[in-house]
Image 1 (cartoon, helix red, strand yellow):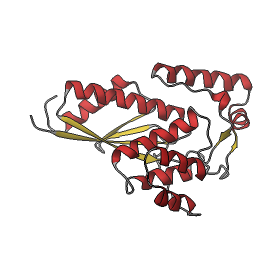
Image 2 (cartoon, helix red, strand yellow):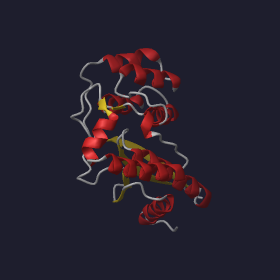
Image 3 (spheres, one colour):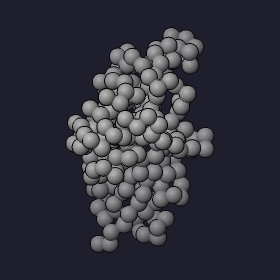
Image 4 (tube, one colour):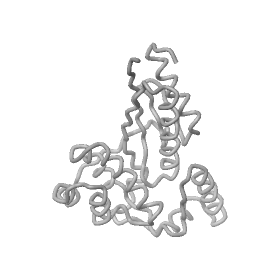
Length: 218
């Protein structure tokens, strides 16, 4: 059986709950693909997008941010309940009441973008998941270098290079532009894309279409 490879670029931000939901949906789609088409390998490339680059380095109060953004406490409750239900459907528990601050994500993105140079891809995946989890599950401030260092240590990274990276005062991070498509945004083999936290079935179909577009039989 000939092996095939599909690349999926995922544009995301750590503060976007739909990106975490989309991550779960994508992995579910890939697991299904492994069962139906074991000859296909999927390579995921995570592309950092900073949705709110103007947020101060130490973040801003979470509740005040959403109240200003949506206008009323009722609107905030409705939006958060919508997200909670979507997250629950993919096994993710998000308690917005516990999140104290809306962080600036530049430092977290910078850390992740350099992580592949420091350890194995499996550790990179742990770091990505760890930063998401720190924010949405443990209500930690992921704009804090000490928090990011703790996450990286837990994921098995060596302390000296991580500390050196996080101590860099002006670590460059260039946010990727999705052309107004928002996040999450999935690009398959650089050929076609899906925007938003699509259901696993839709992402699975997109993977099959990318495979077919390579001239292979599904």
